[in-house]
Length: 430
Image 1 (tube, rainbow, N blue to C red):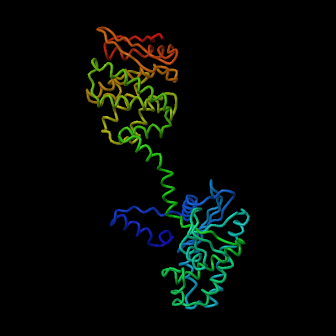
Image 2: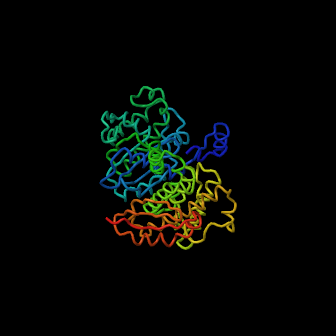
Image 3: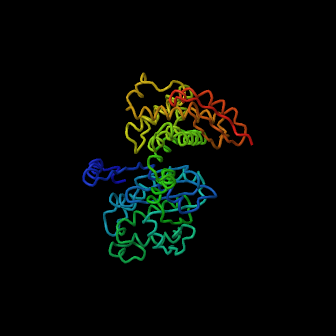
């Protein structure tokens, strides 16, 4: 709240960035309320209907009505205890006129808002923040048991007695009050009057206190957004593979088909190593090209091979050199339609070694893609026998693979050109 509203808030953020290397994101008032809601939801049960949640900070006070699935009201008002104290309370003990002016301000700010809250019929009231925790402690409502996520309660009748005591007190008196933190001695009167006003207007008999709020909400929000990323980091420690999978997911890939085609392409690569003589690095790039060959469908089915190339080139793949990314993109691009040719700028710009990887990779990918034409992953294993003039491929499957074999036969042209051999497919009969 302070940084949001300060005239030099921007200067402060820039100075933190330049001197400390810290990038500060200042959340909006509504976002602050949303994060508080997430923090409360992480700790306490919000089932059974809408719950009223409030957090009294130093500069602002947040008001939320929500259940365990969504928030129906998210509001923030400039009613923080420190702000109200600085604006209205000047004397010690507090002057009656100052109290009158403060309550008039509360009435103006809370009237329409509390009417909205009442109309939503909350089944329970929950409070969070140091001010509310202090008031619970001062009124004897602290709980040592927190199995349900609550650490205390403010009961309306008890709060009235605390407020009466506070209004007659001086700062030195409040320093001796049980349950009141030393840093809140000056602002507790404004906070207590705000809570009393809320309980009166919404007709709350009690407010249950939890110590889970904005900080926990920030963590919950971060995990909700980044948990898939953290999970994949554990499952896929290799940063290059992880980057490829991330791009594939962002492009809504056909995962089962893509992974199966990559598996078949690698089977062909491994069993034909004696005639292509490519290394493990080339194998990796061919696998990734196979995994990403169809992501162009994310843009359109028509010319999706070209769209796949565009997405790979512009997908921010991490851990790859520029030429490695180009190789992956070209392999994906040439899984159908035109053969690799130096007439295409993207292929011509590659080194001779990289072009050979693309040619071999595209030739094998076309066959592998054809061998899953049905997208049913019928073919499970392949055994290649290399002859002087050709390659015989014996196929094992979990059903009739005739459609898939037909798909591969239609894509044999590039293989014959690159390997200078014919290739044949036959399913092993059981």
